[in-house]
Image 1 (cartoon, one colour):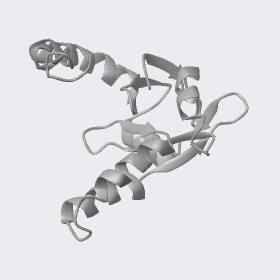
Image 2 (tube, one colour):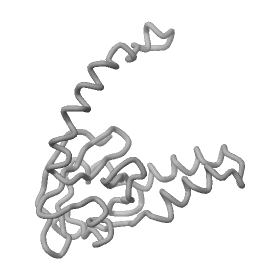
Image 3 (cartoon, one colour):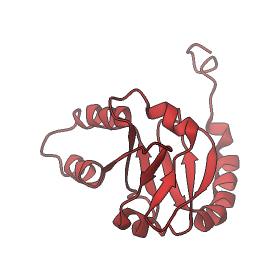
Image 4 (cartoon, helix red, strand yellow):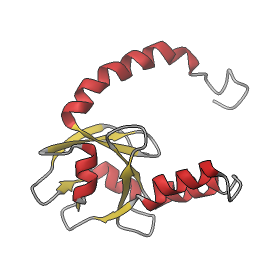
Length: 153
């Protein structure tokens, strides 16, 4: 599970250190790296490990093969994804087009979201987090314990 928020330096060659706890999450997917793609929700990158993409594929397989929504999701996620291998120091090299899409320069902020993560322009994320906290406060009553919902706690 991807947890925490970490800001790391992005060098002129596009190399950035992936947080060590993030590296541990993707370590057993048969590929020693991460997968990232441009978010279709905003000017940031989304990512995870191969297991996340396999989960997305299983979900997409429940849709009709010729469904336009399925095809759009496949293109937006799989066709735009880049597999980024870790170097000896736990860094990856972000392709220029991905860094440009997210406006990454100098630093980038990794945001853990459980099964996936985001990579943001650090200043944009700092200005965004206040709105996120406000929205979370407004929606906290939507969190239902499993015990109360009839499941196991």
